[in-house]
Length: 389
Ligand SMILES: Nc1nc2c(ncn2[C@@H]2O[C@H](COP(=O)(O)OP(=O)(O)O)[C@@H](O)[C@H]2O)c(=O)[nH]1
Ligand SMILES: [Mg+2]
Image (cartoon, rainbow, N blue to C red):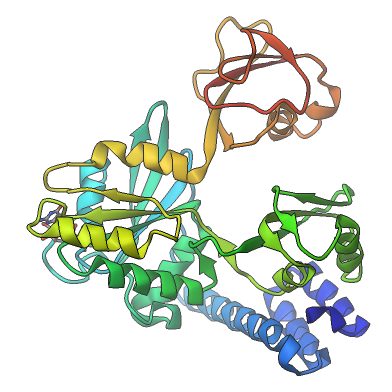
């Protein structure tokens, strides 16, 4: 039960959340720990906070190393409609994939651990592009820092989605399990658990809003609001998927777990005997709800579907905007999450626009007829054209 934290501890956590200086944050987190009663009910929370302290300390160390001219973590600025990290053990074919589907200059090599730094390429899909990043090989023990594992997993944490690459001519099931477990230990979840919670703090006063369509098993939105208020959180978006209890929501305030959409790319389909290993992989993953794309980077089999699979994995749609005076919509679409409404687009375009605009028309899959007048909460579909006055 997280809910029995003393008020001092909750107030301290509010200070932690509001603090933007890393060393100061570490100090406040330590003070928080000293204020939390130690028993079974708080063990998980304390472990989470300790893990975050460790991560922040590492960040401080890396910043020091960078100042001295050493190498810090990898950070790749996002480009295109989504940033996808290609993770895999050495020699699964990450470089071959990048070479086959993008224009990136890569080194395909029979040598172990040939790729040491992230390599970037753009994958075109319809009229958008995805940024694919080949990460250095992920090894067992990566979450403890082995072979630059912290940086590799850091790439995954910052990405919009991950491609988990396995080799069908080896043991793809244990390769997948290794990656999944290393990510999990680093607080990155790819498998959908029973429930997922994300509390997104907002600075402007919109109050506490529960979104995402999940089921609250033991609480009402009002209970959530009261619990968050006890942490001085008065404005937040609580995204809930699956079945979620009040404890899960409270626990999420202390954990840095992120959920990443994932796609398994099973490579070397051309090699002998891979039909059987593919079946084993499918069996092992039948409950994980992670799509599997079997490919061969040598024969190009399956590679044509990669863009579509990534598009679906990210759960996005393309929306073209136009002004009434324009004949044609913008040639480049906005890429937004499925479920985005007309008002969502207006907010994205301009934070002040959404209060003023009144009249919108839509062409495309979500419209009953071309040019239909729609309200703010009209949900858009892929390929829609939206006219905003
Ligand atoms: N049979 C087969 N071998 C492949 C395929 N893709 C890559 N390889 C081989 O696997 C080895 C490692 O490839 P590479 O792309 O460098 O793997 P990385 O370490 O994951 O980047 C090379 O010898 C490739 O020729 C494939 O689709 N089929
Ligand atoms: Mg490589």
